[in-house]
Amino acid sequence: MSLSLLSRYAFFAFCVLFTLFSLPFTDHDWIWPFTLLTAALSVLGIVDLLQAPHAVRRNYPVLGNIRYLVESIRPEIRQYLLESDDDRLPFSRAQRSLVYARAKNEGADKPFGTLIDVYRTGYEFIGHSMRPAPLADPGSFRVVVGGPQCAQPYSASVFNISAMSFGSLSANAIRALNRGARLGNFYHDTGEGSISPYHRENGGDLVWELGSGYFGCRTSDGQFDPERFAAQATNPQVRMIEIKLSQGAKPGHGGILPRHKVTEEISLTRGVPMGEDCISPSRHSAFSTPIEMMRFIGRLRELSGGKPVGFKFCLGHPWEFMGIAKAMLETGILPDFIVVDGKEGGTGAAPLEFTDHIGVPLREGLLFVHNTLVGLNLRDKIKIGASGKIISAFDIASVLAIGADWANSARGFMFAIGCIQSQSCHTNKCPTGVATQDKLRQRALVVPDKAQRVQMFHRNTLKGLAEMLAAAGLEHPNQLEPRHLVRRVSDKEIRLFSQIHVFLKPGDLLKDRIEADFYERMWAMARADSFEPATPW
Image 1 (cartoon, rainbow, N blue to C red):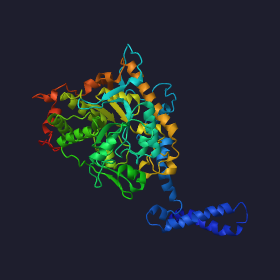
Image 2: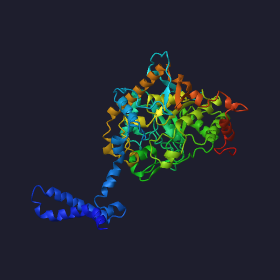
Image 3: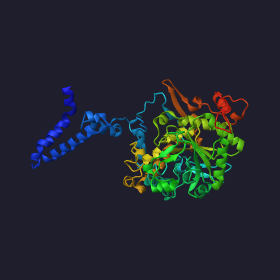
Image 4: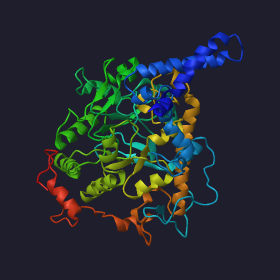
């Protein structure tokens, strides 16, 4: 017992004794700094003994604080000293380095061969052609969004900034992203936090995301306000309207901007009171059935002057999306686009259970949405975007090959403006000024420099995509098909994606007998008048 006590309190006792015995000798130049240090540690030790929350500090005064210090810097130690280039936590060093290099317009070439084990199960690649195509102009990689019911179609880049709100991101981050989008001629999704003055400052194309809180177009009790919506939606800078049903990180959960991040600017932008947490409900109040949702889409299109209107969601129950598809057929109202968000997306903080175990990953959700629209002969009328952990040209190519028309990236563009993956976005203490409302912290983010990096990341990524396409014998991303994407399925076999997955043919879901069993069951369960299933499993 005595040895145990000695090990626990020896250092604290030493600090106290050294302070007491050295006080008479502080007139010596060499001793007073040590006396000051041990005095401070002695006070810390007394505080440790008197405090209640931390048992380690009470049992090991002074020394017990080392545990909390090391714990606080553990992510940084792991990221910079211990992790390998391929540890995805959630993005690997190799991925981040690629973004940083392209954003700075530096070479991203890799010497001495790949570090990836190309014989591991799950390895993927694009098949190349014996007769490569001429290198295409990345500026031509665009897609026209706007179906037959749209009066103002929009020509979008195949690579854009995904939804991130002002409030979650700083004013300077929003400025840099939007200015970069204008320089590069691609769009910037506002996120559900509405359109702030910083979105408008540089004039970049905007996609206005309309979440369940209806920020920027809400009544005092949080309902949708058509007049306020029309006033903003008809602005020429707003090119498309995107209804957010759910997001990849926490589908079905709703969202919250903590009260300490609700500044006067955010309050005015969103139309919410200060001093309270800003809540995004988990469900919309403007509609409650698929048919009502289609009518709401039609109403927004009319109020916006005929601009493209669509929705973003992370797939959950398959029959619910098929219910939306049935509502399209019943009402004749079609969205102009659908953005499929994968559960691997995640700029916002979310409960661990949601981050890890709720929502369908991007590729499976994307394939299901694509197949459903193909099976209903609607695919040529509705464009599909994809978002969820997209960083490189290969990431873009892989989602385009299985059904997407374009790809969005959130965290990739965050890296481009300086994010170091400190994972402190929800604390208001972002070390690079990207995800904070602290005025002093966000001053570190220099807008003109970071806007240039946003443009360079976009341009160099599409240049990489153009080079991949040329190697595959293609000239435009819309030529990518499942047969171009290959996966290793075992240590002895590789397969084309066209061999791995089921791809419906046009009109398959309109036939009396649907050959794909899963799609047949989901179609039978889907209802246009309700999100509830029509039949039990």
